[in-house]
Image 1 (cartoon, helix red, strand yellow):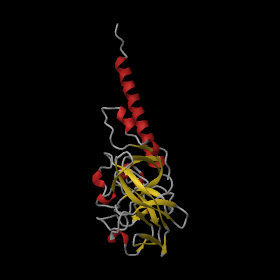
Image 2 (cartoon, helix red, strand yellow):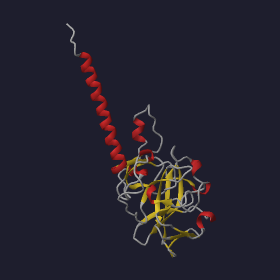
Image 3 (tube, rainbow, N blue to C red):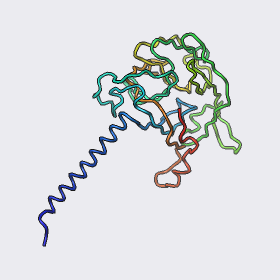
Image 4 (spheres, rainbow, N blue to C red):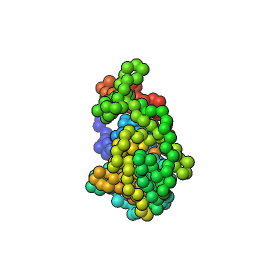
Length: 270
């Protein structure tokens, strides 16, 4: 004999399923907006620290919150709340300015009131030269994520196993606050290596890519670059790399997910 409460039970299960997914979506929204958010590296502008195919987490609480802390830049937060200024040398993800607004990752060089200039490839902050020490060349293997076309002819080489690599001159910069990081300086490009003096306006930051000759950053006004970035557009601070792939994996071949992984990059901090 058929029961009469089957339709009601089915509706109850459907409602429970909907409630579960709504709760799950809310949790994800809160986590991505206010705690942690993932970010993948799409370009070589932050070499040598970040490679195309790196995946990292950014923390969302360091500098306060704005509409750009929320997914898709939902206009739910006016201005900035709990605002805190970043430190020079922080690696941050931010929303670039219109018309080509998108998520970008760069290093903060100048804070409000600072002056920034490049002279013959050397960084000057508030009129003082930032130490630039030559260190060992940076080597990038040629992979699907970094094809040979991305490596200029003077930098193409072979490693000990006769595999193609890209070898770049590498330097270490140290900011006045003690923050130290590595940069690439491939060649003399006057428009990037010899600039005017930039005065960072209030409420803004000056950002640069570590790959100094291949980064559309605050040295250039839109659309060639991004100019000064308002503080409220900073979404978070890079904290750790949680995955990295050289681009050779195929979805239909699960074993390639392992061979394509760059395991030595996992867990690297900033």
